[in-house]
Image (cartoon, rainbow, N blue to C red; front, side):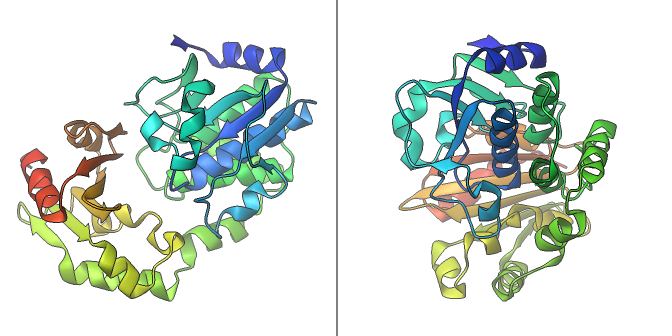
Length: 315
């Protein structure tokens, strides 16, 4: 593995032509926005670029990839993964290509190197910031669709600029989006001001079943698959649910647990500044950022809850 600078990454992309971009499973606004931005930017420079269609993309974000996808990788394509910290984050449908990925562009502080080349910038609030910087060095302009993709990437990963990872450079990137015609109001309304009835039912269920520890400073939310099915939830309803318990007054660390198939639990941990979500998830082979991290466990939901309790620091 070779760690690249933005300049070296720009040179690599400039020296090659045919690219296919990969996104992570349960794709969020950053991986989808970053991939759309990179694809459009490469095309604007005369490159052949596509995004490998992610079967897990939801209705909320599907418009970002319209006209940009292909169903499979062709011989000679150079594979680039964006916002993907490990091979385990790839959708099952992409596993056949995992060993063919040449370049990874990412911003996760704790990550598992799995590509020949990588550009990882933990200081970037979103992967979209890093992608935008690389494209700028390549001489790519920012048209309206690209601005919308970039704004989606940075706004989702900063909670609309409310999270501690937001920096002055994040605001500069957002301003650049505004200057180039991004639909700020429409994006903000869709992502942060509109809640489905399913989402409201989910939040009500979590409030009733949430576990509070350490005098209310820690919240654990076990969410069985049976409850998701009974409430008729979609992945859009469940997006960013990990941040919900952290929004409760007094909560410093929150862990949300979801069932993924038989005896597999997906853990998402969120923490306020001063606490380290990545350190908690690292105990289970996961990682991420201090403020937001994830991991998976092969066990029952009850066993996962007990394991999380033991892994939590004393506050």
